[in-house]
Image (cartoon, rainbow, N blue to C red):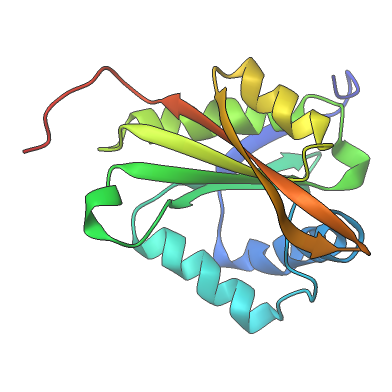
Length: 177
């Protein structure tokens, strides 16, 4: 968990958070395999992505530890075709200094709570790199189950990468007709 004196707050992301979000994401793009992007998007592109989530009334959350942005999570459209409209895809990224301190757990809990309050039925995680055990474990902790592995679909940092596909129901089956 985070240090006892640290104060962790989860809140809706604001556009003013996007520079810090972009910095966290850039580190993952440049040094990690969770994202299959190889060049960090510029600030304008990150603002566009933020607005797309916000304007679609999907949750976009940030975690602050003692007022410093420590991570973010959002639920975007799984796919754009209309039949997928009740399925979300989650994304969660932490500042490396916040990993292993309970920030991801709190963010994921809040994200799922928000998703369950909306009209959505399923949430999917497409986890870059099957060696990304922290993300796989976090999703498993929240009831996501492994539904498949897409083998060798990405090439980054000189090696082929798999994607682990996990899925979780957000609520009991119901009709949306």
